[in-house]
Length: 215
Image (cartoon, rainbow, N blue to C red):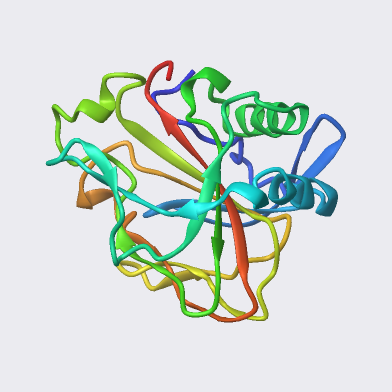
């Protein structure tokens, strides 16, 4: 195992076959370390992940390392909910697929977070890693080293994932996924990113954050 999650894309394969699923490699970039996949989830799996939490979504929060807790913030206007790791057969299947695709243990990942963005809602530029070396959020699992973002539907307009430092923006497409990693938990990773405002329709995503150790 390497010191960070990484899909097996050496040799420029066009797809990675995992458990009967041909996961297509759409794009990849070295800095920031980004890989875009298509056909990661079936439409039925997308709907299942949404349906499992749709009745219990709440205002999204952000990590406040100074206050040592998650708090609501104007920079993040979505709503959402969580699945515990392995909570359902579907969640366990998706988590195992992520683990095989990224060559990273299931236990080194947080539970899935499912988010809903309505028109005008966004997540302004932010980093996913913890900025404080002694952050209490790293007590279980250590630092975050990667993010795997799954798009569960296709909004009519807007709702992309942008990387301001590189000018890259990924359009949300149901069943596709975005992976990016940040071995260095600082600006050199160029992984500052944002969820751009939804302009028409709504956007649903599921996020898996990957840690250095068992979470």
